[in-house]
Amino acid sequence: MLITVTLNPALDKTARLDALRPRALNRLREVQRGFGGKGINVSRTVAALGGQSLACGFAAGQSGRALLAALEGEGIRHDFVPLLGEMRENLKLIEPGGALTELNEPGPAAALAEVEALAQKLEGHAGPGVLFVLAGSAGPGVPEGIYAALTARLKAKGARVLLDADGPLLAAALDAPVRADILKPNIHELAGYFGAPGQAAGLPQAALWARELRRGGAGTVCVSMGPDGAAFFGKTGEWFAPALPVAVRSAVGAGDAMAAALALGDEQDLAEEQAFRLAVAAAAAACMLPGTAPPARAAVDALCPQVELRPVP
View 1 (cartoon, one colour):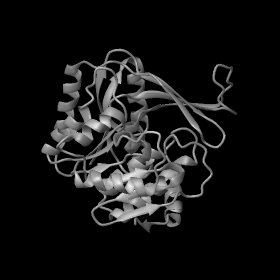
View 2 (cartoon, rainbow, N blue to C red):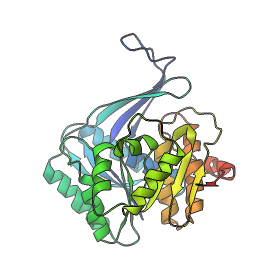
View 3 (cartoon, one colour):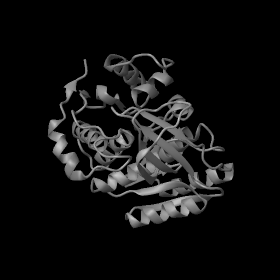
View 4 (cartoon, rainbow, N blue to C red):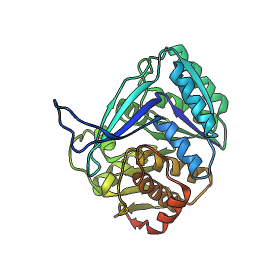
């Protein structure tokens, strides 16, 4: 069973423009709107790939109720804790060539009692055979150690955890004594954790950092590197996959698609090599779509044979 957790859902608006000009008028085109948040995007991609999941998290106000109605319309089961206020709205601007600028609101505040209510709800779903996907940002009022705490509590119930986060949320989880079973950071998030933000980092540095995380108790580590490909460090092998030569329309949902495929592969007991291949193909297929639209299974399957896996030196 797959359960996704979205602590800070959003109404995402994605638009294209010829060039982003600060302190000047920018005219948007191809504007698309849709509910999102990393966990929700993972649930949608899992559904598109033929799987099922239970979406959990916080849902605020009228916009939160609209989110739940949208999930029901897509056949995605949900179990959210309501919050006061309204869901945040995010603006994602895409320039020619795929350069992305994101303007994200903080989101509604959660009281500690509401955070605990969600934690208890998740514990009620936890058990052997359950994989939780803890993904994305947290709104005001949510402790930075929330993913670390949830990982420990859910694994104590026999569940497994996939973590896809950044900044203090990621740092707290990586510094905790109980680590996630699957980590899916991108290279910039890893660089930030290891104190090298803004520095050029490729496969050798990704391998060094991923191996250090695994020695520290982390499970599988899958590092996405955008146009430089992706790398996988697991129990049965380490592989690098160059980026597939696809026509990129939007890379906004690529990381979420990769996380969804990794989660689905884990649930279906795919070999690590197969799960990584599926994840790379899913990310590439997502890049070919506008906004955060999930890729169709047929498109992913068509790309899987093109994924080249090389041993990591």
